[in-house]
Length: 239
Image (tube, rainbow, N blue to C red; front, side, top):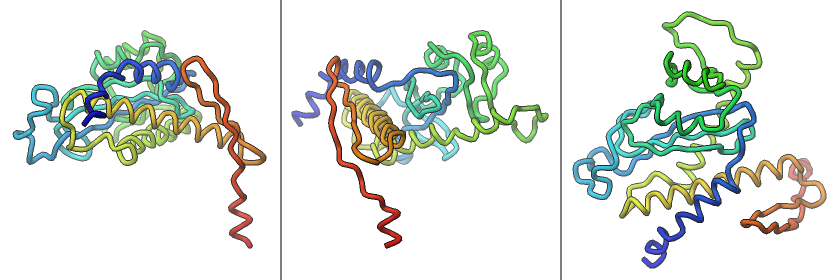
């Protein structure tokens, strides 16, 4: 109980760590996606008192839900760039949401078919952002470069982040006892996920030959940790 009471006191440090250390930067290629966060089962919507007046009923590809939506941005390296939390009934193409998400963006923004909107594309294009998406079956086909087609297929990057948040970091459950606890759980999951993916990518780039230097940034100090190299699993399998 003491841990839950002290969680709200570290809200500002969590936000600073996310913005200054964990989040990456826009490099001209950005992916956007939203995922629903259920706070209770549909049968218990009327009985839920913790999020009364905050959460709303929305609809996703998986059906009807009661809770919130997490709108997430990431670059081509898999580094989260920005996020926005809204109620469940807010449209993915909402102007206020994209005013927050598009802050500091440039280049191309790869979205799914649910973001298709003429007014949204015009607003983003006027800001110097070029949205790229697939074509629905009932619309006329348009020419698209091979490079854009390949990058559009890499939307699995941001879907992997959403899967990490929901299935491993458990941001979606019905045990929240206050909205503050829900927010802190979400910030902690984002911090852990972004840090894990950054370190995982660092290890992949540098390989496991010799030693691996992991850089842990703690505010203004830099701590270097030396980890022994992993054995060659392919060689062990052949033996």
